[in-house]
Length: 412
Image 1 (cartoon, rainbow, N blue to C red):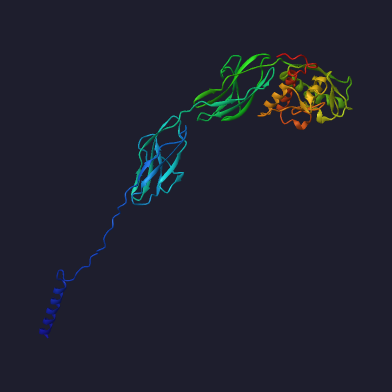
Image 2: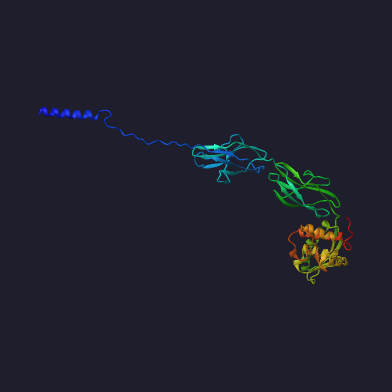
């Protein structure tokens, strides 16, 4: 028994000795080769500037090589300091071509300012920057104007039609006109600010002028560059008209008459004002309320009658009837001026061309009693108070053409 146990122990020890021998059991190693990326950052250049203004410019770049990896982002970065990065201001392209060229538009810049600009491109290896370019935005210039020759000129007022063509690269914050009796007026003289800003057309009406006086007017506009002025425009006001009236009223008026008198008072005062300030005519008229008259009528002796229709008891009809008292449709002069339905008079037709801003010659239309446009024959012909102004300007032009027998001699 003891001999067998000893032999078994020896065998076990022998086996254990063999299992622990160094290198006896091979260890399998991982033989997979590690692959390292060989991509590099892209190569690119920054494009030259174009369309440079006070607040914007166009630029871009050209990615000439992608570095062995796809370009995932590109654009323009810029700063007030050299060597701008994407941590500064940047814009993305507005277009990208297959050749790697891209275009970008910088906006919201400041006038008369230097910027540093670089194109950039990004791939898996990192961000690359193109060559640095210096951008100088344009300086703000003065505004430019178009000044329409003046044709709305009365004795105490005149209108100007102006257009601000360009703003000089910065928004026009104020515009208007200035005038004086001396050439080249400034806003330190007389100034009338318009209620709009920016570029575009505008009209102003100067009031409070002196009759038969030489004036000078200029348009002005204000932007970051300062105050700009148009060329000097000279004009002369006409002699002031003298339209007066007698309002014939009943000694013991009825309620209907009192109401009619009240309705007619404002029209006769307003129509007289238009004629006195926009023509040089002299006339005394007699205003009468006559319910038997269908609408209204007048003759060249100055007699005017208005009927009961409230639709004609207004400024439009009052001016129309005053035209008749001055000779339109009521004089031999008038009948000689209308040929084949057209008015034959140089001053009127030249004025009408200006009013209508026509590039071709035009002629006023007329018949035995009336004329148009701006003859105020119907309420529908009035769209604004400017139609009253045009009516009076044409009456004054008719006076220049010889209609003076019933409105006083015309003197420049």
